[in-house]
Structure formats: C-alpha cells, structure tokens
Length: 446
Image 1 (tube, rainbow, N blue to C red):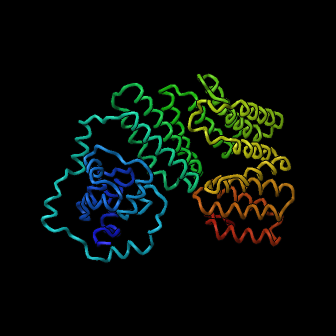
Image 2: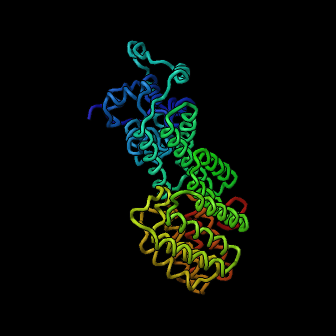
Image 3: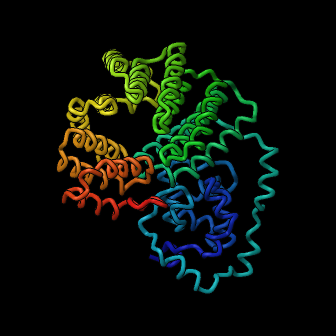
C-alpha cells in the first residue's frame, strides 16, 4: 500500500487542539476535514480514499452542503483518519493503542510545503459561523429519515455498549436540531424536527439515568417533554413520563413513580390512535410502581392489564418506533421482574430464566440486568450456588457495557450475600466482582 494511503495517527498537536476536539464532539465534519487538511496535510482526495468516500461527497461536506450522520460512515472516518473513537462518541477502535499517541508526540512535526500551505484557502470557522447565520438550511423528508436512522443506531449501540461514550455525540446532534428549529419551515418538516429533538433529549436523559446521574437525567427528560408538547405528541409524552417513573423507583420514591406513570397513562389515553403495545408497556411500568410500594393486589391487576393489552396487538398497528422494543420477550421478563420486586421469587424465576435463554447476545446490558434479577430471585429462595453462578454470568455481560445502573445492581447482590460471605461460592463471586467492577469510592467492598 502506498505511504499516502496508509492510515496513520494524526499529529498529537492536532488531536489535542480544542478546536479539533470540539469539532469531533459535535461531529462537525466540515471543520474536521478542513483541520485535517490544513494542519496534517491530508487533502480531500486523500480523505476520500482513506474513509471510503467519494471525492465529491467530501467536497460537499467541506462546503457545508452535506452532513454525515450514519454510524458506519462515522466509523470509517475514525478508522481512516485515525481519530480516536472517544473523540467522535464511538467505542474504542480496534487499532487504538495506549502507546500510539506518545509515539506520535515524539516525532518531528510534519510541516506542509509552502506551496501546499498557500493552497489552503478555505475560510476559517469564524467565517463559517457568520455565513451560517445568513444561510437558510434546506431540509427534506429524507433529511429527517437520516436523523431517525442515526437515532436508531444510537439506541442499538446503547444496548451493546452503554451510553457513556455516545452521549457527547447525541448532545451535539440534539443542540444542532434545536438550532434548526429556530428557522421557519413547512409544518411537516418542523413537526418532524420537534419529534427528533424530543427523542434525542430522551436518549440523553436515558444515558444519564443509566449512569445513575439522576438530576441530569431529569433535566433532559423534562426537555423531551417540552419538545413533545410543542407538537402535542401525547404518546411520546407518555413514553418520557414512563422513563421518569422508572427512574423514581431507582431513587426509592415509589409514590412519585406511581404518580408519573399514572400521568403517562392519562396522556396515552387522551391521544388519538394510542396502540395496545404502548398501553401494555405503560401498564407494566405501573406494575413496577405498585410492586415497589408493596401492593400485591394492584401489582397483579396491572400485570393482568399489560397482558390483556398485549394480546390485542395487531401487525397493522401504527406503533411508534420507540415502543417496538416491547415485544413478547420483554413482556415476559418484565412480568418476572414485577413479581420479583414484590417478593414473589418462585413465580418470577422461571419467567426471567426463560426470557434470558432467548435474549439476543448483542444486548449486553439487558442480559446483565436480567441475569441479576434471576440471581436475586434464586437467592431469595435459598439457592445460593445457582444464584452466585447466575450473578457471575451477569458480571460477564456487565464487563462489556458501561452501565453504572447494572454495576450498582451487582454490588447490591453482593450486599445481599452478607449472611453467606464465608461460603466458597460467595467468596468466588466476590473475587470475580472485585476483578470485574471498579470499587466504589469510600466503600470497603466492590
């Protein structure tokens, strides 16, 4: 392979430059490509070749006429230009090594030839900002679909790896879309933008919730509610309120949880065309709230309503994309968790075990979370060996995903092992826990 085509790390001075860091954080590839050209001597034709893009596409990006939103393209840019994944909101790339940056720092800076420098006649970022104020951004239904496609990618990667690394990119896209809302557009485009912004705000809130940073999560959930209210999307408002209800159970505020999910159900019932799948999901969240309050009758009633609504689902139902995750498998495992929260371990165990056996291997957080609940129900029944074995399986999945919510559950399981700490299986689990999860500051145990 010719030297010009061989991927090499960018100069450390560029990777650590605040302008480059900010451009990567918000995925402003027009700025990224310009900086790569002027400061690393990698010209558009070389960028195109390294990133498997057409030269015309790179030119359109630099000119501000095209955006790059799809995750596979962003990954190709990271790999082709050797931009560390974390700078672009991606997971660590396979080629990244701890020594790579230090090696580049010791190399002599690569100064472009004088004639190359004089050819760099692109305007600076300050001029771009001025021009952006005077230029109306043209959007089409295809642009909205590109946004929605990127959101689907974010959710998929959140399931696989957790949302911590994705959050800067999601927030950057959220602020970009909110900026677009300031311009006057046809109602169909403007309403679509509001819906996309609401979903990005909810996703941001979810990543904070999963990290147990509850104040930040609540702020973004509230923003999502406000954006959805602008277009009177009551089903989506119900979805956000259901997320806030679930968070309240984690904050040990069961009364708040019940109030929020009740409000969610009111929104959903007042909306035109709310589907049975949405109502089933909300009934299950209601069951979680009642179970946390210790109300057996109300929990069982809500579980029954969730199953009744689920049985009414038709293939032709116009389900919102954000509720399609709530399939039969999710219904089963959530039913088990509701019984588990209520203390009905013998009922919960086979339900969770069945769902876990059928769960996709790529959903690492879901597998860790559900394995924790299975271990807890086994421990509640005195099945110490099984419980520790299941919890160890949960650790394996937890190690592959950045989720403080899951890590916290596994530490809670360790606390529940207190009466059995000297048993060999408990000691073995403790050793694995210490090796897998970092200790909590100020705590004597993992």
